[in-house]
Length: 404
Image (cartoon, rainbow, N blue to C red; front, side, top):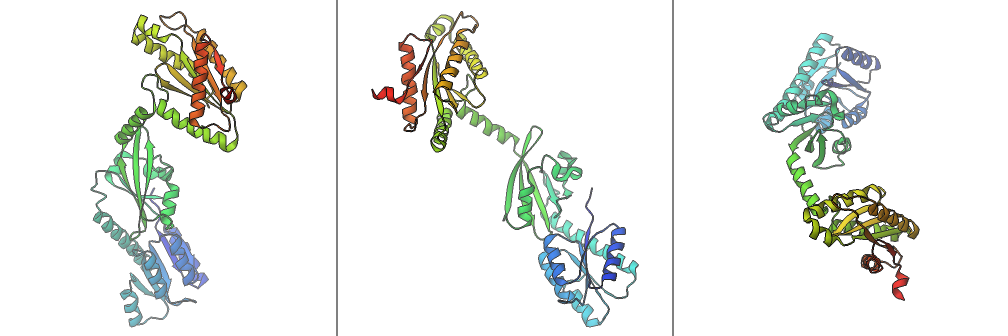
């Protein structure tokens, strides 16, 4: 629904001020009143008006000065000067300084309303001229405009076609949802120039280029279709961070995750454990059944592990048949129990075409003197020990063991 045109009434006569405001509300306008020039200017700084009705003689400054100050804030706001002291020179000065009309008190209400309607229409025409000058109507991509209250006042044909419910829903529409702070910052001058915001509408992703157009006192939003670009970026990210066979984190991504968790554990003194596991005699699986079966086993193993770890844990393929599980907030006993649970689940699972499969685990618990390399070396040594001790077992290695 289109927003009501806003009119500012500036007059120090309380009866006249109230009468004008009441009549204009009945006629469908939204009105704001001010008793002097300072109040009027402050109101113009807060919100955009289509037209102002200004008494020529105000307590703190002349109506012409108020008009000039308001036009400096909002150049397209029209003004009608009202006065009980008429002279040709004053009328010429008022219109020469930008007043749309000049009326002598007492005026006929029908004449004033006609002037108001014409003034509002002139402002709308000027806005359309500026709008056409920037060609939003002709652009193939959507263009949206909002008034200071955040109401959608204009959609070009492309926007109307793509977002038919936008006018009615306003900033609650998924396209504009979440952009309120940026829009407010632009209105308040806290965000200079143009701001960018991304939004999802259904399966599509859009980039919003949001700017404040001072000449017409509105927010203009240019909407670009970036769905394909976002999909390409997501595919590139997945390729860079995940293992293509199992879909879990790859070595590079896991190293980044581990480094962040290591820093957190050092900073806050919280426990953290790392488990490394390796499939026992996996080469026999590939040699006997082929690599396709071997790949299926790795995928099934990954699914089984993910089902038996916490949501806060991270699992990754370290390389070949070696995998890692990062366990934040886990001390040595919790890590031992978690690794033993996984070992038993895997040993008891039936894998297609295989009878049984076992896994060896090495576990290392974070210690204050650890860095990334020392923790990785210790968990690798723990896994090597599990292999040397007969496989299908969990071995935990502490730094003091290494020092002996």
